[in-house]
Length: 466
Image 1 (tube, one colour):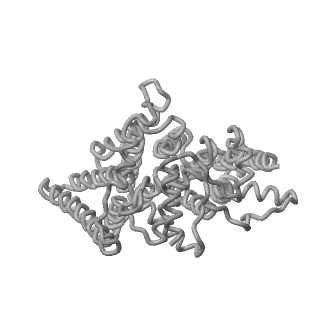
Image 2: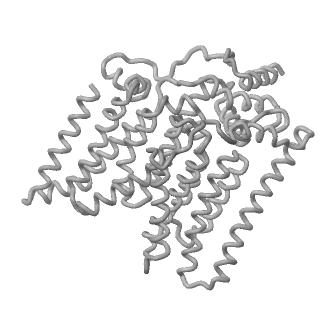
Image 3: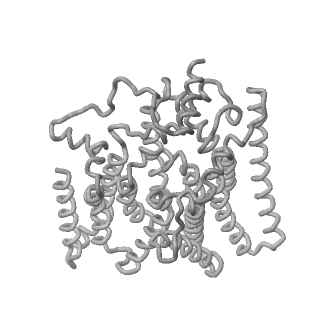
């Protein structure tokens, strides 16, 4: 049923595009419709389908991987102190975020409710990626082409990202928010607000997790590099450029130190002990080397991911340094390409020797964004800005891609049935079911034979008995 009406959308799209290629008055009429009304309608329809595919109607989770986040967060909610009597595998700020979500929802945090939150946060990260793409080169068409790739990222992996919280927003969301902040094209009056927003996210990342902090430093470094080039090309003396750079780096460094000092004092006041970061660093040492026993070779397909980001970096630097009289818009686009490329390089290289190959899909987003921008640029160069048929086919065809491409993946058909789009299809067929399975919520009891997981389980039981 879904394939039928989606194929109909594609047929109508191609038909209208064909009419618009005529050289009569129909070209002017349909060209106006295609360029404006139909483009907006098809984009809204594609966006709605994307949203319905990203939202789960049935929460799903893996107890072991959820336990690494859930049990420390419950310990915080039961009065234990981070880095004193709580272990943190994925970072301190991560656990505080989950504990905060538990307070917001108004009832005890468990697998079911955390799975709902993870899905909501992952949908939010998809929205961040969509916004970043829309602010880059050829934003409207690029954003439309990004929609099916967001869906593909959910269904083309080994399992749904919502089933494993370590492959979504909880791990990579802060870095994506920082990329979004860097994509803000602020004027002179709002430039300080932009700077403080980026600085605040950088400071937060230093407490969130070491991984997020490494990502954030490289992203901010790329953004700062673009600023230095802008100051230099505006005719400022090298002394002034160096002074501005020193002030910026010093201010951000002081902010990080103040945040950590305040956090340490707060832990000391509430627990009577200073935080011991070994509760976190000992976990990092377990994954420091040789965990996945794999590193991409020159001929490995995964090397294309890092190569894409390297080429993006080279192009951005060339635009920033060598292009004479670069316009503010082109400078902004070059800055965005540089920031996204830097994010892709640091995310990919951080995982060298750590993951298994099938776990790498969730760090491909920067290279995917660069490929979308590059592909749309090639389309514009070959077919021009004013060719309505190409724009309509690209945007209207997105609607068909959303389901047909995902169902081509092994097991995606079953996963689609667990989304809001699957629920809507059952509703149209007269098989209406509850969107949210209200009822008895699952307990935290698990029988996994995992020493680390079992220790967390015991800690959670101890905290729950208080």
